[in-house]
Image 1 (spheres, helix red, strand yellow):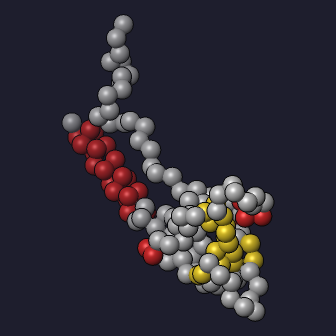
Image 2 (cartoon, rainbow, N blue to C red):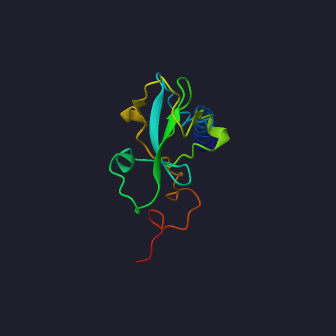
Image 3 (cartoon, one colour):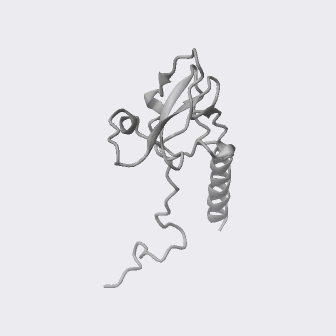
Length: 131
């Protein structure tokens, strides 16, 4: 009984420490070292820059959004209009400024966490399957 209790306590401590590491800032993001441009769709969500470079009239709206130096850079699918993300910029460039392309390490898409079962899941457990 004591071994089982010790294992359970150790497991609980490990899980608690792991959740403390994930404080919700996993996707805090990168910040622009320079004035930067990113391509956005009509809803203000970031898309691949190739959409703005190869835009064909009548095929939807894509345009550049100009992110200020020091501002957070959006990932694909992030809305530049979402004030919680802290993206500061404008749909129009500021005269006299030059804008860099977004760095490749920001070419990511956020995704929701996925549950794969585990303790208490309805999946068959080892040794408990039907024969």
